[in-house]
Length: 168
Image (tube, rainbow, N blue to C red; front, side, top):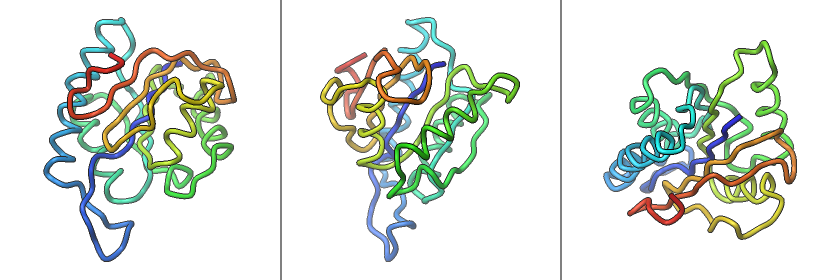
C-alpha cells in the first residue's frame, strides 16, 4: 500500500487550539502541494489517494477538504488517533485495520495530522530518523508500506512548502 503522511497547512490563532483555521498562506500551500503531489504520483505511476483520514481538529479537517477536492474520488473520514497527542501504536492499528483485505482497502492512504506525530510516524515506518526532515506545515512524505509497523516502509518521496521540490 502507498501511505502519504501530510502535516496540516499553516494555521492562525484561535481561542482554542482545536479551532485554529488555516491561514490564506496555509490554503495556498496545500493547494499547490496537491498540484505537485498529483504530478509526483503520476510520474511514478502511483495510485492517487483514495482514502483520506484526518484529525478532527479544524485545521486538519480543512486540509483534508482541500486534498479531497484535488482527488475527487477519495473518501474522507476524521479519526481520533490522528489528533494532537496521538500515539504511534494507535495509528498503526488504524492503518492496519483499513488495509485489511476485504475492508475496501485503499491503494493509497493519506493521513493528515499534526507535529510531532507525523514526523514520528515517518521515522518509525522507515526504521530510522532523519531520512526526511521534520514536516513543516503543509509538508508531506510518501512511503511504500508493507505494514504499519517499525521499519516496514520504503521512502518514495517527500516535499515541503513553499517549493515542494526537495524530495520530489
